[in-house]
Image (tube, rainbow, N blue to C red; front, side):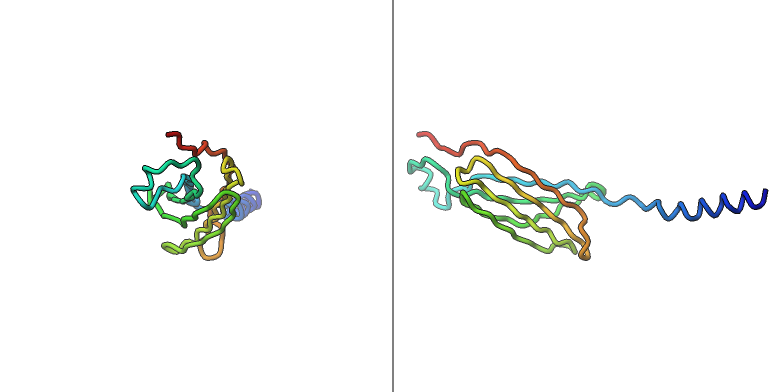
Length: 134
């Protein structure tokens, strides 16, 4: 009986190493929008197509409700770019691209802490037409 109890306790002790405290969960919000005009009078001029898009990232720690603003990338149609920032001990890397016709975009976000990947997300999306009719 003692040997069964010892084996049970030994098994339980070795199994407790498998249980880790839950890691934080992160929400990644990526926005890709047409770039606004720098000159307010430019809005009055007729334009057919917006040439550049701005891709921004915000990562939220769902446990603490803390938001971290990541890198911002400006892309023209057919462009591909990668940018990284370090904020509050995290390194956030954004890789984004837009198709030549500005109808399709893809992105990937990697967030690291102490060199370890904390979260990685990627997506492909269709963009709404950015034509301005006047």
